[in-house]
Image (cartoon, rainbow, N blue to C red):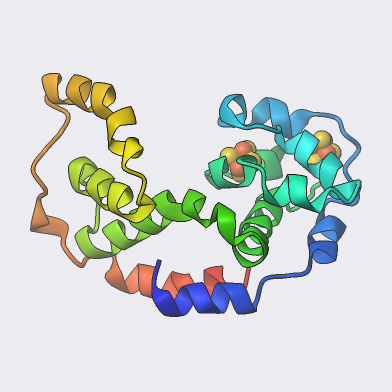
Length: 184
Ligand code: SF4
Ligand code: SF4
């Protein structure tokens, strides 16, 4: 993530009460959790997260892996029968977690690596992206945990040498979007 954008995000993080307001109308129907493609890996499903939020469990919510596993696909937002802005609520929780729980910031390493990578290369270059992610995570065990997957991809010819043909093509888009991300 661009340094100035990080600062902007922190400064403009909404209060938890504002995020709670976004999901106040939740009737716990479970549609969001059942529709979320990443729910299988989350520690709390989106439905459970909203419940915790409404119960005032700030540490549980902000310390949850769920907010970082949300890939902003908007499926929950489209399907919620109450029309709640769930993806925006996830974004707001990410910014709050960054501000209030610095010990969880390492979970944002993939986001930071992905955005920085796209800004430079204009498309995903798997090997370069993962190298950047490993460097940002500063966890020496992380590369080891991806070794088997990396070897499988290599055998199937899915890992390529970084290709600079799209370099810089998305830089303007990313630079324009980052300040807005800090305000949503
Ligand atoms: S889909 Fe909407 S109403 Fe249903 S549990 Fe999720 S947030 Fe609540
Ligand atoms: S926006 Fe996030 S929480 Fe909602 S369905 Fe997509 S991944 Fe799940």
